[in-house]
Amino acid sequence: MKVLKFGGTSVGTPERMRHVASLVRESGRNIVVLSAMSGTTNSLVEISDYLHKHNVPGAQETVNSLRQKYASVVDELYSHKNSKQRATEYLDRIFNFILRFTEGEFGLAEEKEILAQGELISTMLMQLYFEEIGVKSVLLPALEYMRITREGEPDMKFISSHLRRMVEIEPDAEVWLTQGYICRNDRGEVDNLRRGGSDYSASIIGAVLNLDEIQIWTDIDGMHTGDPRFVNNTRPVSRLHFEEAAELAYFGAKILHPTCVLPAKLHNIPVRLLNTLEPSAQGTTIANFAPDGTVKAVAAKDNVTAIKIKSGRMLLAYGFLHKVFEIFDNYHTAIDLMATSEVGVTVTIDDTRHLADIVDELKRFGTVSVDTDMTIICIVGDFAWDNGHDYCCQAVEALKPIPVRMISYGGSNYNISMLIKASDKVEALNLLNNKLF
Ligand code: ASP
Ligand code: MG
View 1: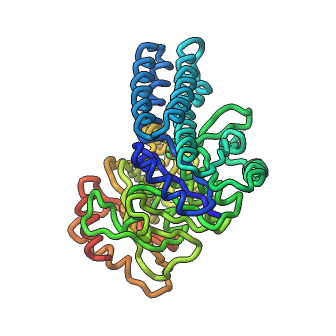
View 2 (view 1 turned 135 degrees about the vertical axis):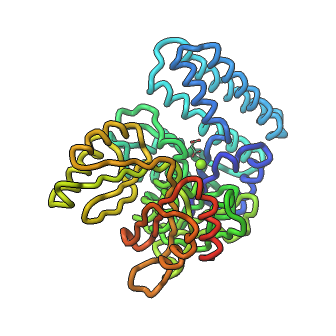
């Protein structure tokens, strides 16, 4: 059995939903995870925003336009009057539920209730559609099994036992349908796995049920060697190691949510990235094994800030780095890359909310300078230092015309990172693509 996750654009129109239904039908007895239709979660965020600001008419207006959108979805999606009527009744209940939040207190807990509605709508629409075309689908309500701990981590034990039982009591289901993204927290309140979290849902489900495969269906044919928005002639990468995928997802490849990698990797379940528009294309398979000694892809991460601390007095004496890190720690600011020398250290961050305070405190230890508007270029592949490759050399050579602020290599076996000015990004990506692929 597999888990198939379809994202917002894959279910973004009635036509696409029908297409997904036929893909699902052909795929056999599997679990299907759906996101909200594209744009819906954003609208729900907007409604909540108005309610936080006590702007009831603003919220009502956004609810109304969402209502209209779904009215036409219902009209187009179903051919039977009965399905149309049932979907409309369900949607009325949902929108009336949302409108109830225009009265009374509105806080984070209420917002999360609203944000959950998009995924609930998607599965309801799909279930009715399956009924119409004669497929026996069984709904697995995510709010009954998907749970996070107080620390916000998935409660794997709880999820495993509850989900298993729910799947087992429906032995003659042809397909199981469930919502991505939504869950309950340790207090039993409705919560979510953060924006883009449906990939994570699929990965958790695949892991706890020990399924054969986790399929993430989007509208491009897998992870590409480069970012097609900036580079011509990219091609899909057929196989990636989990470690490589983690580097790529974090460093800007938008196709897979970074958190999605971990449960799959730990439980050794392959993740396949597939294209709804070209279902027979090979896509990308991510697993605990992948071709050795090859370069797989290049990604870029924008909005990076580099901070250099040059230590005058202490040089890089014992304890210097500890003090530097402690400051970042105190401000809950994660460091991405770093490079050290005997007299200084440069680190990069992307969360600059506490930059001024951090710089202020760092000044106790040395001279501090900051470079903003930087981009990390991340070259990913199997780069174990002793496997005879010369990718590092090729990458440096490719970037000859571009000033490189910092290089990081050897932190893991899987990446070479270079820090450049954001304005050099497109050129750098193209130069690397031409040289490495
Ligand atoms: N609907 C949610 C979002 O837009 C979750 C997802 O699509 O993965 O963030
Ligand atoms: Mg998504």
